Image (cartoon, rainbow, N blue to C red; front, side, top):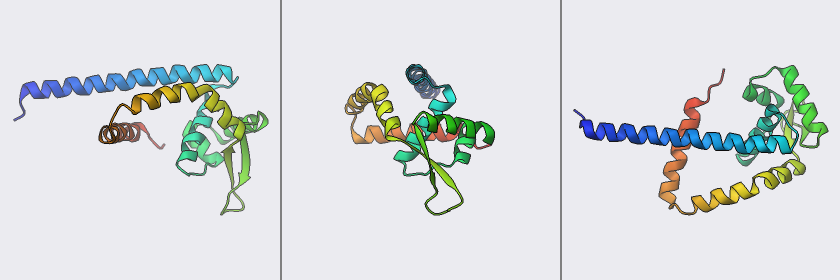
Length: 156
């Protein structure tokens, strides 16, 4: 049987870590909200650019269908959203490299520049914090965050 004191301590640590995640999520929301206003974009536009940035770093291509699935919006709404981001110079449509009938959407250099302009200071501050931790600690934090992300990500 588990020691009640250690169970309580574990529960307190779990609660504290989840509250820290909630606080970080709130701070990220506020940071993204500021960018949304600065770039004259709505939440879906910015969410699309964030998704593309993440997938680009992973080396993953993004189709319009991927955008629709990620945002949980219709294909018609996705087409309008992509049209808007292409017109503003933030996205490009390109042929899929292996399927000539399909298209992919990619970030433009303008998008990357604007993201860096808005997030550069924040990214620098986050990197400074991360540099304070050793590799083993960062691996644990990364695993924790990746597993949380997986747990709350649903594909409907």
